[in-house]
Length: 123
Image 1: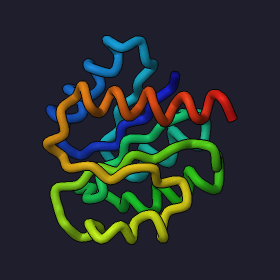
Image 2: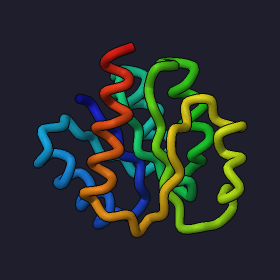
Image 3: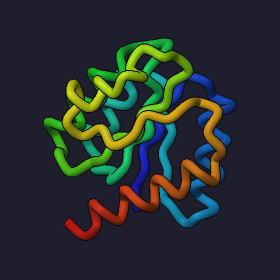
Image 4: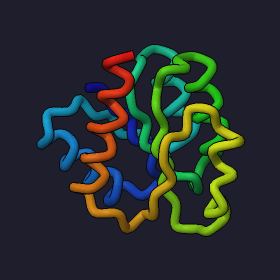
């Protein structure tokens, strides 16, 4: 399963990447909107783990591009804010599947990736 992580914090992104790779996933990590969109122009991950608050660029632009380019890709948003805690992210982003806190355990994140990735594989 191909996974794209878009996370500004290198340490956190590397932690998630290593953990998902231990579960047999093919994982790519990018830190900016531009790098993520460039990657999505050439590749089709099944799952995108996307921090809502990117230091360089906008997460919604990445999700929108992914939805246009590959509508079956599932997006798991990660955030340390309460901005979309009312669930409105699901009204704004058609391919959003989850919004989880940044402190989510890597094992739980891996389980979510496997779950939503299996939905893409069976579609």
